[in-house]
Image (cartoon, rainbow, N blue to C red; front, side, top):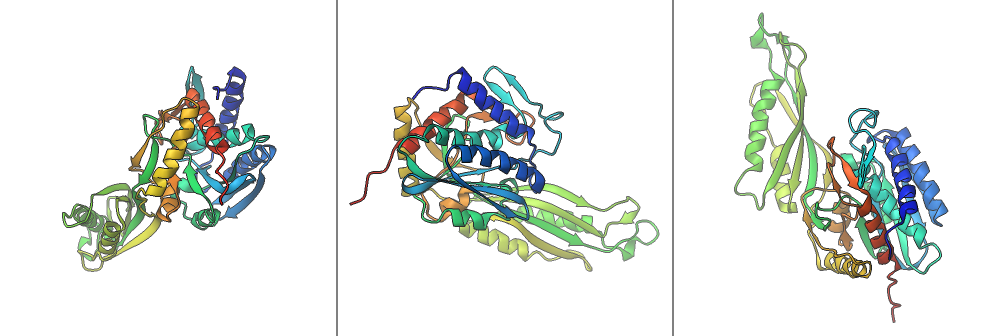
Length: 377
């Protein structure tokens, strides 16, 4: 296979800019519709049968491409972490040689282009069957689309995720489980100077509860390490009012189901330190741990073999971050992630992608899909 020529690179770059300029933060249903419409146009032109599945979070795209054998499932998402106007202010669109910058170009609008570009190249050739699903709420844990992902995974030969790879380009085989919880505290308001004794400070209670959370996740009796990040804290209103409400959103990462079960049970059992306070742990989203299997290694081997045909060396290893492939891998479906192009700065103002790597990933996926499975006896 050859790298895309300058004309092909220009076309790919124009497409990437078009997607980047459709700013699509999670839970923005109209923005997800605009993304889905553009992607549906491209997939339809590539010969796919396309449908849109809508949830309360927005529009999700499912594309079916007829071919040989059970389909490979290609998995992506259209939402980003960036609010509207980021492309004009925080992460402006720019192209400097091989480096392309803009909101969502790395995570993961470039990965969406890899999928459809490879299908376009294979339209008039013999190739594997393909099913693609692009959800609109991955960045917030896919709370409305897990049922759709399960449905799309039915009877597939394997699943490939188009999130970003490891920094060296290695694919991802295995991911930590990811769970988001909200720790909500209710106290009782009062005047902070005239009647402080009748108040119950929700903020003071939350601080003490977060200390307890730290003890839970660092307990040496746990089966494995837990990553814990208190991502947001909010509460109160004025310095002269004892605050009646406070809450924190916590992100947790697990290597195994037993540790997750133990930690979540302890969080749900948290008891108030202060009389009159109420503490509640709410589960916001959950992705199970995906531990690599021999089936995953076999799919990685198939991709590596295809890579050699386009002069690429492909390796894979586990990753700390979570994504929709957590669910698929945990279901026992042969799964590999990280098929997006190299770059960096996911969720940061330095977000960027390599245009050359984007072309390489298109070449690689074309080679994988052109490797038709042998007929069964």
